[in-house]
Amino acid sequence: FIDTSLQMNVTYREINDAYRVLHNSEKRFKQLAENIDQVFIIFDFNYNVILYVSPAFKTIWNISEKSLLEKPELFFEPILKEDLDLVKDTLSLRNRLKKNTEIEFRIQHSSSPVQWIRAKISPVRDLKNNVFRIACIFEDISRNKKNEAELKHIAYHDSLTKLPNRRSFLERFHELIS
Image (cartoon, rainbow, N blue to C red):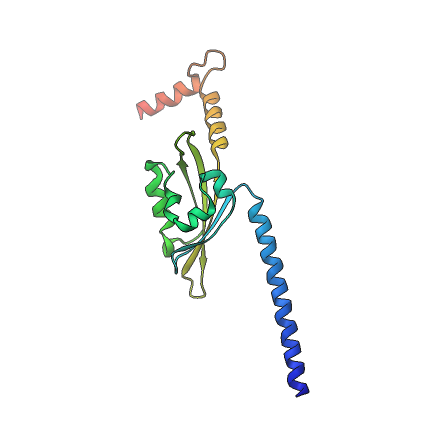
């Protein structure tokens, strides 16, 4: 009887310790996910459901996390038609997704300018090496794209006249004679 009681006490402590570790880990994950500007989404292929959406989703997509969890197709609504196939194809790769994948696409809400989004998609594999989930991070890179366009303009145009410069002329010339 004492042996059994001692074993139960040890087992109880082990379970309690494991619960505490899990709880702390969950707490740290939640602190991270709720305090970053990027959108974090976990999708489960086996059950065809979104398991987690970070609060930043509302900021970029203008849709609440709750609405997305209830109607996952809302994710695709603001994506521009030109980019929709790329996004759907990439997210549906499942077992063909060998490693982390990055794509860029555009979204637009009814009365706002186009936003550029960078998606980093990471497969999560089971013990048999099958993809059963994907973890996605979505980031608004509109400011980066704007800066990139401005730098390109500066590189290929005269700062005083705003006309195409020698570099622009030579590159265009080489394109035409090739």
